[in-house]
Structures are given as C-alpha cells and as structure tokens.
Length: 117
Image 1 (cartoon, rainbow, N blue to C red):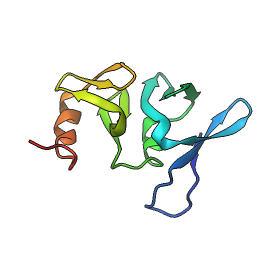
Image 2 (cartoon, one colour):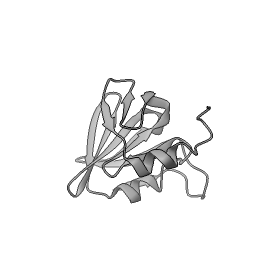
Image 3 (cartoon, helix red, strand yellow):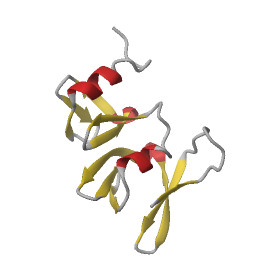
Image 4 (cartoon, rainbow, N blue to C red):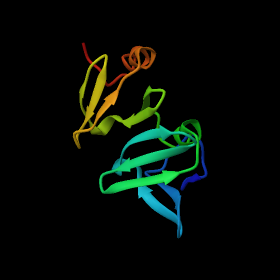
C-alpha cells in the first residue's frame, strides 16, 4: 500500500510512504528509478535497493507525478529523470537496467513535452 504525503489533488508531493515490514517508509519520489509488476505485487526499484508492495501499477501511478512517471510497458513504469537512452524497443536507466518498451506506450510517450525532434 502506498500513501501520498500530500492530501490535495492534483498537486503531487515529492515524497510517498511505502508500506514495509515495520510500517511505512518515507521515500523521495526522485529516488524511484522504475516500477516493475511481478504477479500480484509491484517491485519499486530505488537508487539504494528495492521495495516490494502488494499494489497495482495503476494505484501506485495515481500518487506519482505523471509529468515524470510514465508507463512504458505493461510491466514497467519509469521515472523519466532516470532514463539515459530510449528507443522503440528499450529504455536504459542510469543504473544500467534495460527495460522493454511496448509499441503502444512508446507512441504515447512521444507525445510527452520532454521529447524534441
């Protein structure tokens, strides 16, 4: 379960609280590199490790800023701040991970105002 620190909508906070074995851990959203769905849980890949939560990609994406967090595949969402290379087939993050890019998601991604050319 993930809770946004901010109660107002659509303003997005720079922090979210992610449930772990001790309760909730506050995570700065800039430290989230990408999200990965594995079965019924979501793996949140951070700069300094991973966190596993039983939540849908949709519910997590609702609390993250859509200007920076975008879906690139049915199994992946990524923080654009951490993308160093992007093609129609893959996205490479600044920690060296190669993520698949879905055809439909790539087309939507190209409409993002951050892409030039």
